[in-house]
Length: 312
Ligand SMILES: Cc1cc2nc3c(=O)[nH]c(=O)nc-3n(C[C@H](O)[C@H](O)[C@H](O)COP(=O)(O)OP(=O)(O)OC[C@H]3O[C@@H](n4cnc5c(N)ncnc54)[C@H](O)[C@@H]3O)c2cc1C
Image (cartoon, rainbow, N blue to C red; front, side, top):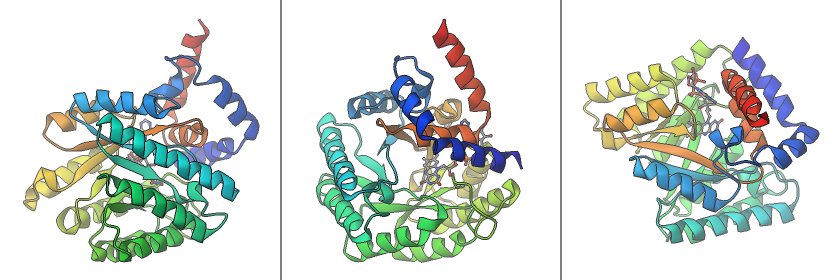
């Protein structure tokens, strides 16, 4: 399948240190850089500026300070400090208070207890300030530990937190029951990582069918779920399902990535739906950007056209 081959190819490129070094140094140089289509900038000020534009058009946002898989505790502590600064900057700015983060960024690969402590530090500052904190879902080797950490924090009384489930994993329908039973907010996605067939559907039709099943459960029985997709068929189905089951449009929200299907984003807001845009920013944008290219090879054409334009 082209989709999974291209995901695998771009996942491989994402691991190239040389490419990453080169890209990080040069690709964000100009305000018109092709990277800025998907990542508004490297600083929190860039992200807040993008958020203001979104809010002016009736959209909301969640901020993601890019970074993943740190390999030392010092890096994890630095990433935590960065997030605390983001929470402070967003609070001061007056834009909506909503962040997304990854556990490997907070040190999950180094030491689980430290990663949880780091997350707790962020929650201690963010929750009283009225933030919602979404724990992104990473590749399948982290699914169980991410849900365990989430459940532990939930049991400790944190309520302004939510998690993500990926419809490409076989296990996710069971996980949906497990997390929904807590009363927690779930973001439903198809899954951005190349996964083996021992754990995940390989055919797009199967991933989509699982997405549709999970989405229906979330809309009727979920807790303010986030339907995160750019797929017009899934979006139509969600709208239709909600109407048929008398679920008001403010009981769930759609979510999309910054720079992706802006036409669809505007259309949904115009039709009276809630739409949250995932706004990633930071110096470590390279793996995120490569995943976006991998899931939609047409974006490579966009990059090449922009490069040709920048060369002029
Ligand atoms: C808000 C948000 C948060 C996410 N969080 C996570 C997470 O925590 N963990 C995780 O694994 N994944 C996450 N994802 C990514 C997700 O898993 C998918 O990889 C991604 O959304 C593409 O799938 P799709 O549902 O849009 O449908 P697809 O079937 O892949 O695409 C449907 C249509 O959407 C458009 N489209 C999709 N992707 C792109 C793109 N990159 N560029 C341009 N057009 C595109 C195309 O028109 C395509 O035909 C998130 C996605 C969103 C929107």
